[in-house]
Length: 397
Image 1 (tube, rainbow, N blue to C red):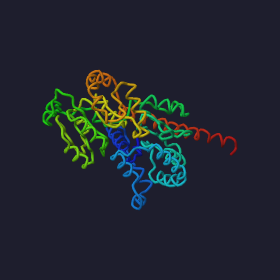
Image 2: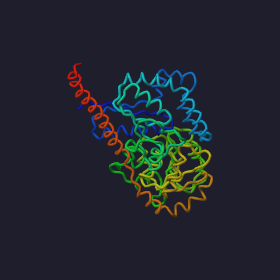
Image 3: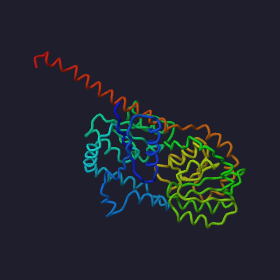
Image 4: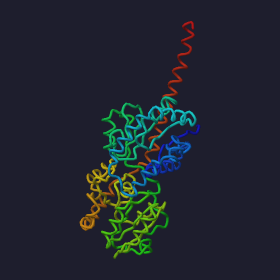
């Protein structure tokens, strides 16, 4: 059996797309499938010399800086402008991407990014017909429209919620090409407790009282100014703040007064281990961090307001509908809402414990089935062509 080249398309805006790609890469490696997984940053494909980033700005860096500063209001309108711009640039994108596919010749393409799937799919099918294309949603819903799902395209969709599945079917995608998983992709290490892990001892070493609730506060890889508001309003609550790459934010948090034990940390790759120390989670309603917290049994506290990114709005409905935690209009009211939340913590944890997400292990099996079906179609076509050849000569040709 020959090794198949599987391309995972991502970019670094927000960090969640790359994290999902890395998690899937690791899961495929652990599954033992005879595949060569290639991580492909779309930014490097479209701007290989870094010209746009050098003489203007990096869209990824701009987006991540806005997240870190909490400047997310108005993103819904900006996303519409981006989609319009991509449609104008569609012919140019097709030209660049066709050359990329000819040069790299993948056997299967999996996109973990929104907005670009029309250009990616059309360029692939025009260049390498028969190579399957899969859009793997890293959000719980397709919003705003056509963020993930481009209508009128014969591609596969992998959806991590029943809501997204129904959106795909209503958009006209064939049922046999809409694949459901039990949730969002998270890293495989969230499924295995570290050898020798002792929660009580770890909490005590950090100065916490293991008999009192501990909250884990995280806002992605670049943190958020909202963490300062949370720290100021909850000085008597045991909290772990994960600031990612935002060293200035970590410094400010350490300087704030507190009457309860508090631990502020910068970037760590051991997110799963830190989350295992918590009893509940506070953060933005991103699909990745929500899924990680819920998988480890942590009810969540998030907000929904004008600053909530459009692609994350449905996530707050999902939290409410399933009883997975608390959705506030603002963290400015968290001190008033927290006592009732903690009183109901045991019941919330029971509801969360009933949610079982195995998506990172389900997706390789789905991809294997898609690839097998595509190969079978090619074999059938070759067989049909071979069978028709003698008939041509029988007819005197």
